[in-house]
Length: 502
Image (tube, rainbow, N blue to C red; front, side, top):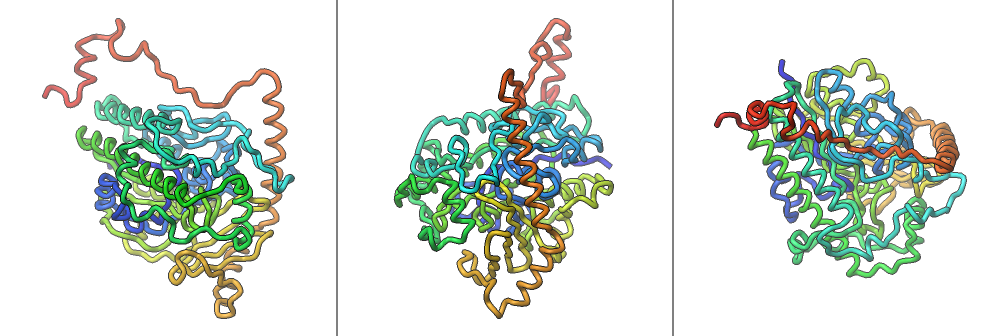
């Protein structure tokens, strides 16, 4: 049986509440809307961890951070952890990445046969948090609210330069795949860094939202004292006392964010257009690594289990999958088993250590019985936090904080913690039991502390004296491109043309 080609479109920090059933109708996203119309749309999909590196490592492996040991944005991703790129490549696929995956450590491939770009973030241990120093802000890499006060318009930025390159290289790869020089099925992952802050957008996308009715959050900012302890830690990590956030800052930040969703929509449309014009058929999966609070409750960016930060868009267009909306909660750790299921690739050898499950039964109408798990053990935490989403409920636990229990059907903005409500005692007891079965928080905390301490020693040592960077260096052999004297011009002209002879 011919294995299907797979195109994975990943974005960064896209709030899943904006995708209740595909993109919200007020977003200017014609290409994502067309993709949604032919996709299974998972309306309640959640990240494995609301931060870039741990969320992406879990997405690729189908394992939660306590298994991958990628706890934060500077934790090494071990080379012996199979990713979907390994599973598919082992089964005969050519695997390629254009863009960001935030791999930390000397292995910058993790099963990809080819990378077309470098990463946008560093690959070393320099962004390691330190639980031994609660309250410490590492100013040169921690987020701060300057992304909010500095929001606005620009024609080029660090991130635009990156995503422009990611899209261009991916387009060229799709053309190359169409030429048919390699008869293996392919899996191309195209991973953008937008709409991740800073909230800066090109004018033509900014102008699309001049009359937008959604430039203020549904839940306005709260007093610091009214926030839960973890949210207070996020405020402190973001250096909130150094910034005065005015309503106009909020409007400009959200406007630029929405504009950058439209910027991505154009990039994605260009890729899908190349796919169509070169007559290539492929499964298309669209997903984000985590969300963005976008000023809800006064919170920005991620690092939280609240819906804006932890919920992500997830859509799959594939032959045999009837388009439609799935309301049951699912996770990004379910993507790897799903891709293997779609490709007919067995994961049996590692299934005992896999946290995800194939989404195909749920796409076919089967109700989910298992909870979705989320973990967080990075900056703004001083001990690991864990979360379970099951049915209408979301439960949060941390050794340092009071438990939280939210009824998302009755309280979608998570304003009423029901953990102390006697009427919810049975529900709370059920979640406690599920959490006890899944996690040993004391062990989790000890593992994180050990990892952090080791990395601080290694990082400081490697920065003393000659330094060899781990950042990925894309290599292109110019002597094997276009026309060279070891090539037959007639063969080159014919082989590099698509379609041929028309």
